Amino acid sequence: MTAHASSTALEAQVCAEFARGGVAHQHRSLRFRIRDAEDRDAPFAPAIDVRRGPILYLVEPVPTPDEGAFDRFARFLEQHSPEIVFIVVTEDSLLGEIPAAAYDEIYTASNLAGLTRRIVEQNPDGIVRPFDKPGPR
View 1 (cartoon, rainbow, N blue to C red):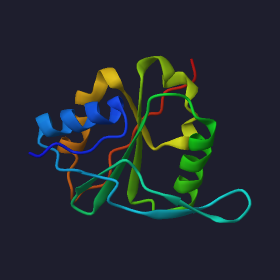
View 2: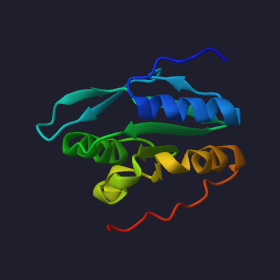
View 3: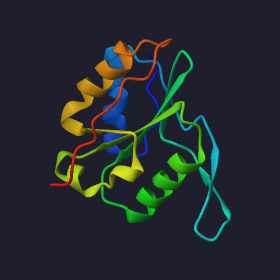
View 4: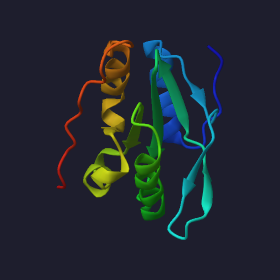
């Protein structure tokens, strides 16, 4: 598999784990528009996308807290298809700082194998398994 261009070390970690686990993925291949608070269109290109049958996983590495990004993610989830599973990956120490409205699922850098396993084990023709969001610390 050819190395992919990554914007952050955390994105490169996710990419390497997906390659190890045999998860085919692309970087910044999809473009979306999100209506912002001023009712303007803002472009959004998620870092990683994974297709598993009709299920689309969008994976966004978040190495540092970013309230603007969290707001953008929440707006994305409000405005786009429920068939999309929006996943945030963050450093372990930041897990409790990311609002639950900003993701469908969240994984830490120490649990990238869990993220890979979750995607691989998902039946592409089945209902997306529910994810229990962690509470604030």
